[in-house]
Length: 461
Image 1 (cartoon, rainbow, N blue to C red):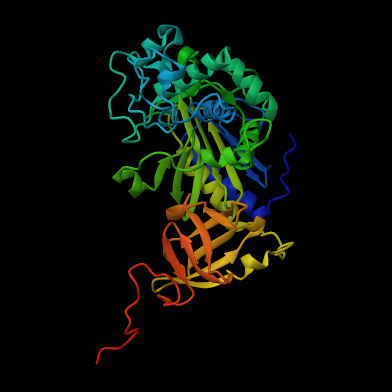
Image 2: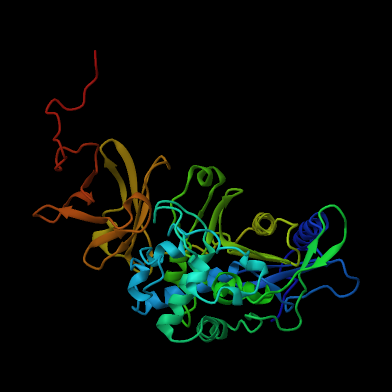
């Protein structure tokens, strides 16, 4: 993989290096390696290490912990896109007898299935997976702690179940399916279930002294789909580009977008923190931008993948310590540095290639009651509708091919918009899910729900 250091300005590169240098120093990490992706390509790579000599590069493996869950989610969504499952299916339909089968596949993906956060003792991250050979060993006697679908409660056993679902429907081990269906098609040659040289060693750093303790690198067995993988900044940079743009060999762009959409109910603390969860992806609102990705940790390692789709910038950070630098904050800062120092240059404005005159006549100002809206034409025959004040309900609408449109976001998502015409072909009003939009406030020439007072508009003397 070719890494172009010249694509960012020198001041930007120095700011990025400074950020990871502070993180490695203050976090007391034996090593920390990072990369930045822009326009789908790696444009910067940096590393800091406590060892004299050559620092780790984009080909050195680190354990990535729960970023593995995003890979597992991709496998599950491939099953859905092939029609083998529906996200609303109860797990029991495809993987019977688990004791947690009333949870839907979507709930497991979004950590809303009510399952416990961890498997029964001993702690699965630091003990051999052979201690938990069966799903029953992973789930324990009390797998459910919360009502299904009611709250977001992060669950590692939930992703073990999803990995088992993949194995059941593919008839092959999870790691073989992952390699065949995701890693090889995306060219992620340095992402593996077990470490392959060169790779970093995992360390614990003493909290009160600058000394190290080697951490065991256990094979997680049944828990592998929740956190087994090893990877590099080079591979995760390519994976980040895939999560933004999709790849028809693996998942369509539309499905990648679906992964990035919130899918879990937010609790009060989550609302305050600006965080939620999609389908295999963490979502946060930070420093005025929406970020998606995932963090990961296992004894000896920390990992983070952060993406700002709007800025088309992503960052990867990997460290080989059990605790230390807060890589989620580092990732967000790396994205912010590039986005603010070198903002994305928009594509040139171009006129629409053609326009339907019957749609063009709908553009302009409309009123819902007394609130002013504007309708604009968008590419591919779509339209957008938004308040003139800039505040309130808004949406883009996709053309259905029959003179109607379907809402794509917000309050109007899935709702149908149509122009209602009089017998002579002129437009009477817009109907949006029973809401009537007229050219004038409460236009008496249009059928306004509740009617229009015959005395009309008047003042109060």
